[in-house]
Length: 138
Image (cartoon, rainbow, N blue to C red; front, top):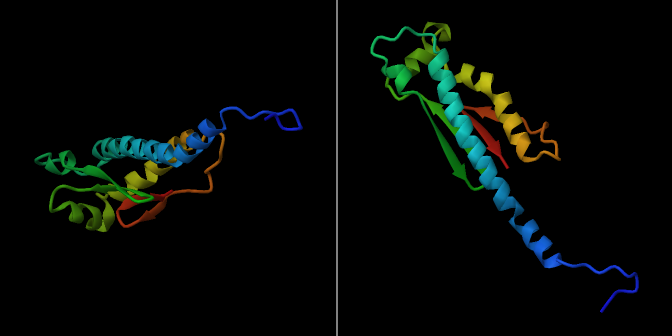
């Protein structure tokens, strides 16, 4: 039956279905951006670490993991050697690379996330930096 206004909605079911699936699509996109950014962080850390390599293991074993827990995505950047902690905190942090990497790359990460929401602004959702990782809730 045609409404009195003369407007007939067609495809409303498809629109509704797409709207229900939107959060899932966004979560997948955020996870993909986070995984890509984790790889960028590792490259940056390995390239910009200020220590002199003796075995090369400290640089080689820097790694990042992406943890997806409900509506949180956490990127953990860490050392894979037992003495990584000493590189971070001894000598007044002169050889630290974890925090410098987070600071140097977090705005690029947010810019990449904004690309997901091209028509919306998420500029007010800057990352929450805590511990030795970068966390984002969505």
